[in-house]
Image (cartoon, rainbow, N blue to C red; front, side, top):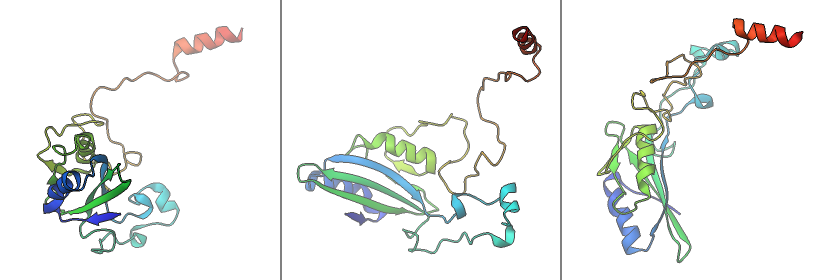
Length: 187
């Protein structure tokens, strides 16, 4: 079962499910970016042009409110379970585009800690009252939120990775030592 709740009632609903109804097992928390995106990405690569996709054939990126799953572009959802009675509930809350924040569940469900951190890091949604939103996966200097549909795919655009990167020459890349080893092995 799923229940859509208002963002202002997110924390109170989570608390009631846990203390009032016995849904004490936190399963997961994540977010959805409902922005339409053809093929799951922007069509801007050379391959798109060769397939006949150009500016005139791009899909309309406007969100039709209430159709794509929510009234806003972003939606936070979480699942909790009552393991005694074998019941589960998924809560969904729309997060407005101009205020990407929602109350934290960490005080009620300790397991929500890393889920909220990941959601903040990947989507840019803040969790009010969270004890320490900090990076899990990405380096501190990383720009943007990679799971947003408007985030440019790095495979399609050259962007330097922040921080120190080990650079080693690939074997066979005109390295005199490799050439000498190859000659000796052939003899």
